[in-house]
Image (tube, rainbow, N blue to C red; front, top):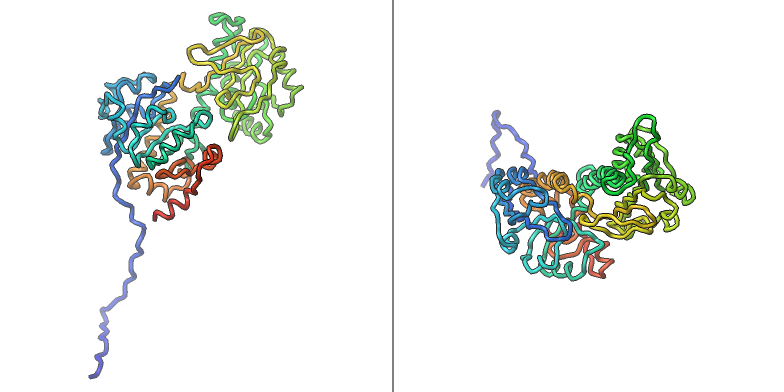
Length: 404
């Protein structure tokens, strides 16, 4: 049997096959819970009513615990008007698939956690307990931390905003304790014509140091900044646009400057572990009575040897006649601004998670968000935590790749 030849017609044309692209899954509907924080001195709330309104109008459900926004002066009515459901028990809030908190998970909240939940909150390495971590691992929780969350530019947006608030607030706080109202020595921070300006020493040229310097200069004070990182000192000068007095941390120079200053700010940061102590007991003893120390790095132990933890209720103590302000979590004293800053980062992130069809899909596409994950479906993916508590560490990249 002869094989028939293929017929080729003049009207016949070849077409290229369309390229098949990675099709985005249909967006997910999020079920978000915001519990009321019971942690000491925590007044912030993670989403403002405006942000809740945006999420609800995008088809997501938000459950807010009764009086969750009180610390930041957001009323329940504002949340319910924005479309959130007000829950009167913690249990009801923790029924949600995703929990967003402005303080770390507490022992009380552990019993409410349900398996495979997603939690977005800070970690606070200093007070983290192994039992809390292990319990979260047992419940196969996926957890994202504020501190390590990175944006597209590789910065940590929430930490940066909190540092900006703390830096700007430092000078307002120092101004209060220099005035007569709080039994200070009656000095106006900054100064006026014909009177030498107030002298401010800032130790640490990170974001906190930069914003403290910016505020102090704007008030008319004279600023001297210390840091061992020359690049940081250069960066602060470039960002502020003023040639400031700067120095590496050299004990003799530092001691000499502290002797005559009115305000000393401790703004040293540490990548892991405790902040180094750079100001000794003797240096503080030699300072003028009535001068003010604000130790912002008290969260990580403090960089003044005389520093001791204080609270928003009792913020100061006197040692050698020097006023010490050592409140950790300064942004919580400006809770509304801090809540707006956190909300500005989290609301777009949540919309992105929904758009990608869930957090797991977003992690596949966005590598920078992986930095913030310290638990992924119960596996510990943060190296510092695994070393500290001697728990098994798993590489997140491998976990995500194996799920594909």
